[in-house]
Amino acid sequence: MARATSALFARAAARWSSGFVGVSRRTPGSGARFAVWVLASLSLATLGDFDFRAFVRERAERRPGSALGNDHAYAYVSDRNTRSTFERVKPVELAVAAAVRTFKNVGKAELLGHAVKIGPRQFPRVHALAERCAETLGIPVPTVYVVSNPHLNAATYGTNEDAFILVNSALMDHFSDAELLSVIGHECGHIHNNHVVYLTALHYLTNVAGIFVRNLAVPALLTLRAWSRRAEITCDRAGALCAGELEPALRALTKLALGSQKLYEELNIEAFLEQHQEAKGSIGRFSEVFSSHPWLPKRVLALQTFAESELFRKHAGLGAGGLDMQQVDERVHDYIKVVG
Ligand SMILES: [Zn+2]
Image (cartoon, rainbow, N blue to C red):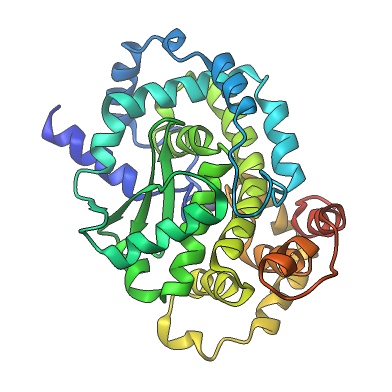
């Protein structure tokens, strides 16, 4: 591949939209030169090579065991429901197929070109955190890379068979081990819940939308973003479960919103949450439908509600009692809905 196109891809890859926190809301149509290149790449792709139906079938049959007792009891019901609906939507099916093909051809190599792989001999302290998360959720130890990037973010990309977590260097520098545990746990939640191909499709749709047939890109993008906002709720819960306590998971979320290590100690969480009340009445709240992530105050409120569940309280050793997951999800639904 030519160096110019390689650099373009790297630049696009640096603008993750589907990471731990959404940082970009680019719409289809920009990056024309790059789009042309990727379109050319994709014209070589045969969509039929990726058997979407078999993927969905196989995914449904997999039930990994975990330290949590049973499968995905913590998952936000709206994440599961939305996914089961869009798995029958043609634009999403085509977008996933195209994204997987692109990822296999060039994407993985480009995303990982400058990344450092974490393992028992490379940053073993961080590797041990990934091992703990894997044990909590009952998944194989994930492949984790650290990548040079000044933004506080992490993301998971790939395919079902070949998923990996990217953690930005800034996040490694600013977050404590307990906070990192919740971030890596969040990303492991994406793997545990079989979100990865959809996140990869969302990444390509957002950053290099020209690769998709124009009439399919926008419906697929909006569908995947609507789902992604719900998937984030599931994975924030996974992060808290992996951390084993609410505090570091909340801290990780609010640090992302603030982006300042120095100011963090002075942050007034209650005032931060009041922002959500202010935004609720404004017409601007509808812009959230174009975002892959719920506004952060909503994520904080949703996570605090999950922490009141019987499931979490038991896992964190906080004693018996608490909300059942249906009660949690009903309350969370009220927080995260965009309209109403
Ligand atoms: Zn996420």
